[in-house]
Length: 140
Image (cartoon, rainbow, N blue to C red; front, top):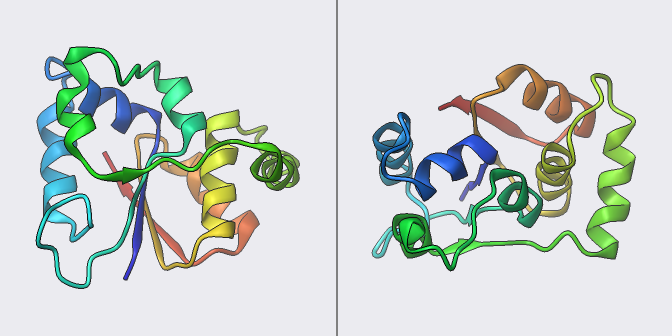
């Protein structure tokens, strides 16, 4: 089983059907065997870190986010424990954003292997290398 984490642009795309990457990201998600899709045997977990949700500006109460809300995603909070873990990642080269450090903290705190959907592969690869988590990057 693999976890699938989304970065902010993937969340933005899924939250807005008029986004230029909406169909591409949705197709990628649908091709991945995650529990977000009913009936996926041996499926992994779809993860949308709450730090990513905030950076994406995705308010789940907005009717436009219906496609995103239909996905059964785990949304780990950026609480005190997760923030402490993310602080350790902030020291990574490149000065990552809070959302990226929350993704990295999820990679550390959840069993892998991991897949991260991102539009910024260089930053995520740098963070993955810093964490040592078993992860691959899929460019959205």
